[in-house]
Length: 261
Image 1 (cartoon, rainbow, N blue to C red):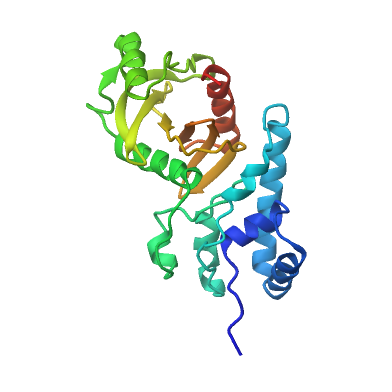
Image 2 (image 1 turned 120 degrees about the horizontal axis):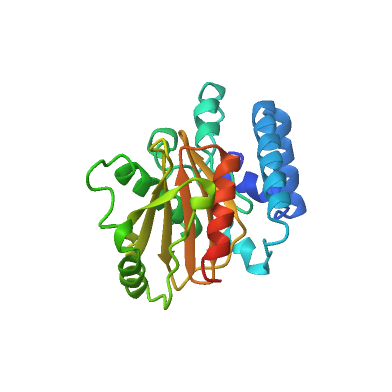
């Protein structure tokens, strides 16, 4: 007898979002009935998803092609409850699909590497940029806020954006530190950095990929970092910081209003 088909995190997200057929739905429900800890974790995901949908109901647009973002080649979830807290802490909380945060992945999964979609790469790149640059004291950015016009023109040219907007977040207590050019999925990307009166920093990442597909607004969590991201046509945006999820959502919403659509 062949071994049961493993349940992946992509399967769980697809189950939450109603993308599975009847057979797959029954398979997941059987798994959840045998694993109450995972059932409780899914309930938390559903609560987060419901809150996000309510907050952005007037902006989020569902498209048929969004279902293609659910990669069925996800990595299997180990049936080992001693490792559940680490797994749960590193799962990306998303609307349509999620991927394990890269910081924990090598230690938790043993399945072969799979090709990630841009919607999975974007929050990881944003997290990496934050970890590398947010703690820098003397050189956190290449171009400082005093040259904001030059910064917008330079990065806009590199990303082929006619009028790249540098979001103004002063109403939320964050002033622009500056920005830099950096790779996002092997292509030119832009990062803007902000800080508040206490020195707390956040980053805003912009990337371009001609193969992008529009997505709903999504959250990704890894360690103490929260990332809020979305894809609009061939531009991807991600806001990352060590701040509360509700506050990060407000910042991301303000960026969304100011970035070109």
